[in-house]
Length: 571
Image (cartoon, rainbow, N blue to C red; front, side, top):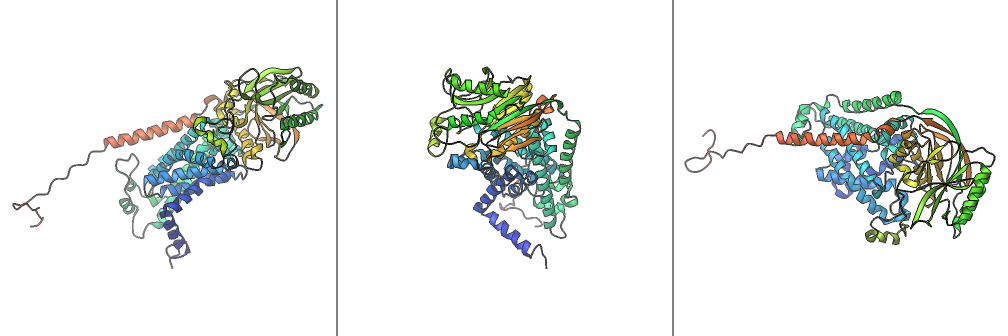
């Protein structure tokens, strides 16, 4: 019996092909395939799964009967990915989460089309090599566009799933999270190529040759990609896979060996105050009282800086000098400046701001950072006149917060210069890079994820600090109201134990400082630029090949006999 053709596996394969022939089953499969990479992120944190998570999505898109269907598979997969990575927003935004995911999912439609273009049929080595560069490049373009603040920011970038992998963090110091994302997609593409090559070899009828298969599936006319008939596909099906893995290993090894490493430059003792969940009408007062009580326990512990979380103070300090005096008294008692975060309507400017404010023994020092990048729908509603109805179906912002206009590096005493970020600003690589350029020795993120306390959001948010630390070669403190609070060293490795979502406590961390400049700080987002250049060159090559292709010769009319009927050969 032929176990492949007639057995259970063969019947299952035929049944699967029949199901995928249905547009509804295929659409559901695309959504599910796109959602799979979410398992690589916290809280599951199956980081290793990221290297194969895209394979089902790739194989589905390449099997599409038309380019249009492949683009649809890309869109639906993008919808599934965005919903899965941001599913914890559903209690707050409800159906609007799906609407946003559907709009952002459109960014993956060209990627799905490109997958079929490059991997359709059985790609020869030349086309496979192009795919190993083109598909990661196209993926980076998707991540770049959706990283714009107005589209939700760079939450859930594929490379962020590698936040606890030392070699990946070294890569981040060279090319940021972008380089990590690109190499993860390279591995997925290589694995997909191996699967395609093996299944193509197994499905080639006995007695046929690769050239026979190529004649049945010719390359598109005018394509700049290598013609399939030119190369025997089955000769070495593992070659593209091996090439992709070797390329990733070579880049990782080079980064590990030659990339500049942060040089030790002493250390500081930083205390994080996490009050925990506090609800009720008098929430701001209760929270402040709890933060005061926790901060007093730090007296005599020789700390250099105390950090409170986002929205830790619900009163404008200029309008409430009594609150400013209370915090200044705490600073004197502890012997260190306190970085608080004020979420209140300002008395000197119109509107509500979220501001990092440094308070010393004599009161506010004058160092203040107003949050620049706001969370769409959470802190403002884009095009409120058009989308203001979102406030009626979820917990969208009733009033838009105001933005700051510049980043600030603060002098926190003891010769320490710190660069604050607020909330999801820690997801933006360019902001921490700029603070490092401006001389920050320590990066600080003040956050509050209490609205998503029992979801994956707190763990996902805390993990971003590891990437920012590795990219910049500067340690980073992620301080929250309700957890997860965590600290990472200049290489992205964890310092001490995090404070979980159930903790109402303080923690003191021995934070190592570093000096020197990483390749990412020096060169910026060069992987994105390289990806864009490659895609432009690929389009130019495709266009040039199309222009060079000779026009088809017109068919000569058939010869006619004296009676006006076509001549017949042999008569």
